[in-house]
Amino acid sequence: MEKLFESTLWSSRFIVVLAVVFGLIGAVILFTVASVDIFTTAGYVLNTYFTGAHPENFHGEVVSGIIGAVDLYLIGVVMLLFSFGLYELFISEIDQAKDKDGSDNKILAIHSLDQLKDKISKVIVMVLVVGFFQQAAHMKYENSLDMLYFALSIAAISIGLYFLGKVGKNNKDIKL
Image 1 (cartoon, rainbow, N blue to C red):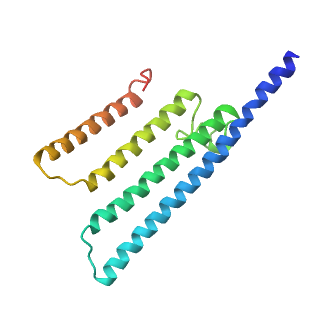
Image 2 (cartoon, one colour):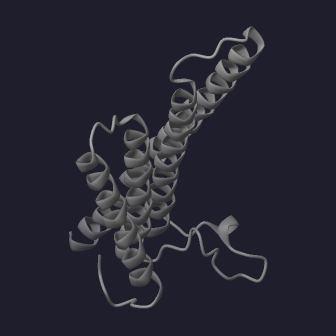
Image 3 (cartoon, rainbow, N blue to C red):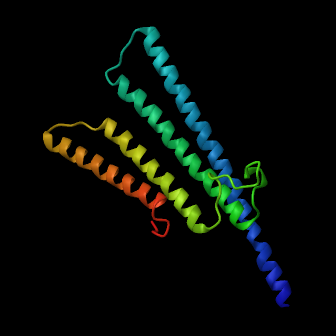
C-alpha cells in the first residue's frame, strides 16, 4: 500500500505540466501582443510623417507605445522563466538547454525554487521600473514639488537597482 501511495504521490508532480504549458501559451500571447503594439506604433509614426500631421502629444504616444511593448516582453520573459523553471524542477532537465560541453546554460539553469524565485523577482522588478517610466512619461509637472518627488522616485529606484545587483553578484547568501 505504501509503495502504491508513494508512486502515485511522485507521479502527481506531472500536474505541473499544466502550469508549464499554459505559462508558455501566456508567453507566446504576450510576445505576440507586444509585437503587434510595436507594429501599430510604427504604423502610427509612418502615417504621421507621411500625412505631415504632428499631433500635440506625438512623442509621448510613441514612447508610451514602445515602453508598453517592452513591458509586455518582460512579462513574457517572466512566463518563460516560470515555465522552464517549473519543468526543470518538477519534471526533467531540459537537455537542449545545455551547452555543447554539457554544462548548464546560465540563463535557464534553475536548480531550486529559490533560484527560480530570484530570477523571476529580478525580472518583475524590471517590469515595475519600466511601468514607472511609462507612467512618468505621462505625468504633468505643475510645480517644483512635483519635480522633487520625481527626482526622489528616480533616486529610490536607482538605489534599489544598485542593491539588487549587489545582492545577486556579491552576496549569494543574502535572500531577497
